[in-house]
Image (tube, one colour):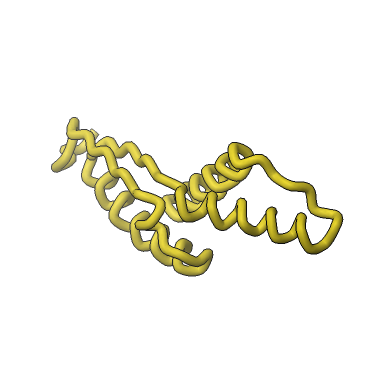
Length: 100
């Protein structure tokens, strides 16, 4: 294996939910920009662990379900923990796709 400048080092990157933007489009752009730096660190041989928050995102999902449930008569109310799981899933998906 060739020598890597950062070989053996580890870094934890913690992305707060607010660091991921306030709209879906802004989030995609910020995730793509962040992924470039993550890939660069990996290419240097650094072990990277990524953690992310989801406060604003889970709130948006919860508000959307609440609004839909109150206005269309077909959408069920969604418990907050499930909204959290949805936001974690799509943030993780967007990060992994941007890194690939």
